[in-house]
Length: 345
Ligand code: DAH
Image (tube, rainbow, N blue to C red; front, top):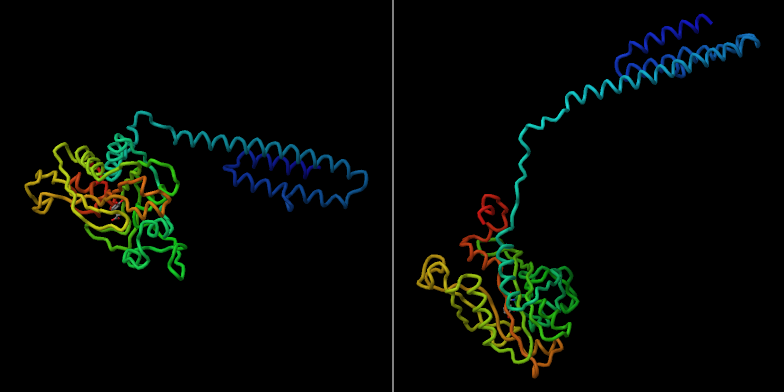
């Protein structure tokens, strides 16, 4: 009994003096653990007489309960002290200046695209999107681009899958947004008046005017009595609104497999107004897009009767017009994401 009493007193003293949670745990193990002092006494009970056993057992249990209570109280006390200490260090000085949140803004390509969309929406166009991973059928076949056309070469096109016969089972990264033309016409809803901006891919090395990934904005109008005059008038209006009211347009004959006749369109240089300068390389004109009247065969393949309907289409190089509008001389600047450059727009 006296051993028990001295164990209790000694333990209480140690608990009261314990500094920190680790020290407290050590004390608990030394007394109540498997090899602890109290546990040893319980083990020694087999040597006692049957009359003494229950008394001692009861005493041990009382001591154990009392110590457990002390331990729990001390544990709580240590935890509380720790928290008070932490709060002292972690007080917030509300008078300190706040962290500045740097505000981002639109990329020049995006600014130009939104401006371009605004112009065409103003003329009654709908903005639609098509997939960047596309079937050969939409990217080439339905656009009258024959199997042996150089654009279909692996040097120009990124193929995802390629069928042995190289036909419409091919899946590729679209090389032009013109693929959306075929998709929209195939849907069979007429008339059509859409633009379709998006990313296109070509197996090109990076330089000042080339990138393996860039953007185009496709335009397509199909209806009754749509003529080349409508095309010219539309592009004229676009150029004036986008580059400035004095801008003139010029159609130069060209060839695209999916339009007949086809043209490339130049605008008067916005910098010199057509006199000739470094921006237009002395010619006074700058090329901005390809266009034409939708080829009757393309209409037919997409299920539209070319005897009843006609249409025009155009494809604007988005980076092209962005560079021109903001007088940027290297396309790479648009992709490098240097905020010192981008912050200027
Ligand atoms: N898809 C052509 C290209 O990538 C551009 C183009 C030309 C689009 C004529 C058209 C078009 O819709 O009619 O070079």
